[in-house]
Length: 281
Ligand SMILES: [Zn+2]
Image 1 (cartoon, rainbow, N blue to C red):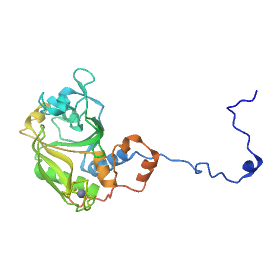
Image 2 (cartoon, rainbow, N blue to C red; image 1 turned 135 degrees about the vertical axis):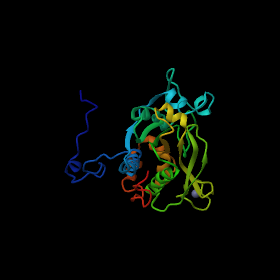
Image 3 (cartoon, protein in one colour; image 1 turned 135 degrees about the horizontal axis):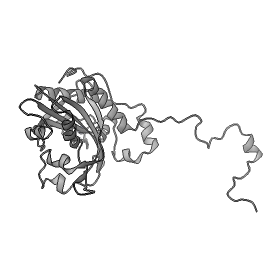
Image 4 (cartoon, helix red, strand yellow; image 1 turned 180 degrees about the vertical axis):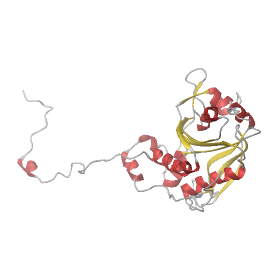
């Protein structure tokens, strides 16, 4: 009895054909970094020359490092409404800042410059603009004599490195439990047009945040806040990709459709060596 699963024999016409247009293009398909990984590398390239190392964080953090050490009270909304606790005392990271206490404990009392990279999770609905799962990069500097000008230099390097030298940006006061003062970082909306839904007509859009670490955070990390200053700055990678590459829905980055990913081949960020802040902090 013939095997119905066997392929049908080729007709002489098809067997003699010199090509089959129904086949995929010939040639090897080479892999490439996922756009999120590529942008993480790009941001790393901006800060490694300043002495930063790059650390991949584990998915789980202790609730102590994710919240307590960073000054999040028990009733903070991020803690009570947006977090996943898979086991007592453990939380799926809500921000990459959670790696800061561990990095400080390992480095104290010496200086620290590190980029903490990790997937973060929030118990909230995803949208084209933000996801319940996203990648965050958090930069951390602890050393004597650092200050706000150094923090602004780091923002400078981040914005100019991603959006091009001279791209307008500004800070405004932001409220973050681990920082005082804290700042949100806005850039001129790179996708602006009449009726822009990206910035809702404001002409600027938030891309990150940062600030000076509170004394309590430095103390918990093993430092004497009378001797060192801590700088923290962070951004969400998918959000930056949306702005720098014109994505309409950042959730597409989780689908991994190769037709989307291949479009990033020739669409690297408008990189260029930052023109300012190259030797700070
Ligand atoms: Zn706009």
